[in-house]
Image (cartoon, rainbow, N blue to C red; front, top):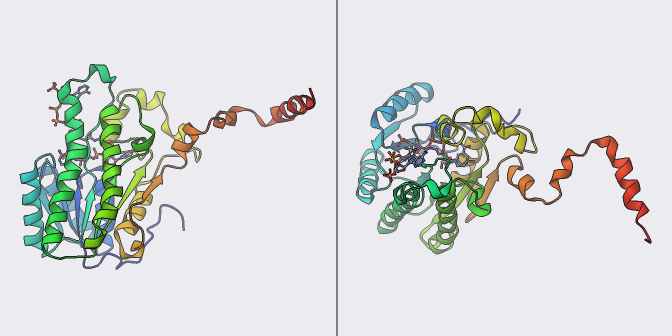
Length: 293
Ligand code: HXC
Ligand code: NAP
């Protein structure tokens, strides 16, 4: 057994219907695949129906599960309401919402137009709000309980980050929404949690965060104490646990899965990692020599 293995028992999500925004690519597709393997029905949504239909055929053949592909731009509340209706018409009910869709690119903030900043806020924060509000109202109106919302943020939701300011601003908002509704809507039988991934290579993220030869210049695995990037299956394992009933008492939590990356950047003396082992005898001697001076 290792971290590339699948974690939960085969029927862990049997009978559940899960809506995954941005489910047709990258991490959304990886989580969708595992949910299907665990017995769930999955609704995948994004702006590109052709891409979603191709992924539906691929994943149904691969897993034997049932996928509904729905075109939905999460920025528009009417499209999200249509998503709720189509999902319920097809599967009878929805149990879990995974807010995974995102938009992002690197840029000095002063180069951004007002519309560029809004575009990221609209996809990430407003999109998550639209889906959460539409599904939440639907569940409350129908007195349905045992519902789960899982939001994908990232560690700069609390550290902030230069050069991705709209994304950091929006992800911070999503994290605040997660914690706020974990308390307010617990009475309706809903749980809210978030995952903060560190670097997990995907085409969508890498093309926009590390374009051209930045991929070679900034090897992200070097920033991680565990000296590697994440495997999609280990994120899928965590997501499956958090949407399953095995995590029924976990509510309002954000779980970081980044190999220790953000803490390495935060700890003031972490740079001492660079000091070679053989230098420590000398350094210790110098420090001890300062005693009683
Ligand atoms: C400056 C830019 C820009 C850039 C677009 N704009 N790209 N400004 N630098 N590189 C500006 C445009 O000029 C326009 O403003 C505005 O942004 C909207 O651009 P559109 O192309 O019209 O928007 P749209 O077609 O809606 O596309 C949205 C997008 C695109 C975000 C720009 O990249 C996209 O579709 N992304 C979806 C997938 C994605 O981003 N995945 C990565 C997630 S990674 P004006 O003023 O000209 O109208 C992630 C990782 C987190 O979140 C943490 C990692 C550690
Ligand atoms: P990705 O493949 O680019 O995923 C983004 C998805 O969002 C795409 O499927 C995209 O589909 C969809 N999307 C974008 N705008 C949308 C809109 N307006 N309406 C509906 N769907 C929309 O990138 P990823 O790396 O897998 O990212 C997935 C999640 O993980 C994101 O929340 C991201 O912030 C987070 N994350 C990723 C990393 C990483 O290292 N990869 C690290 C931390 C956090 P369409 O383009 O077809 O609409």
